[in-house]
Length: 78
Image (cartoon, rainbow, N blue to C red; front, side, top):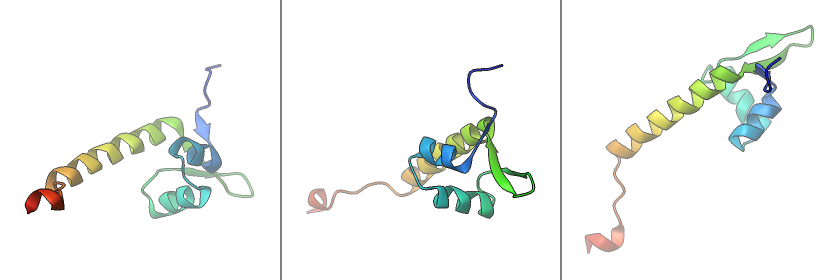
């Protein structure tokens, strides 16, 4: 059995992303972070590989944002 689990709870994902479980739940419900719902109580699980893909996608989106919205120091404009 591998050292890290294949599926993570929303709390696990929140810890990795250093955010709240509520924020992770919102990402899942919006479809931004793929997850599955399991069991009779409908507990959410995120596959570790999906989390890694999400993180890489966020890096790419952030790079695109920075490229299209360059930082301009107000002190240097004077």
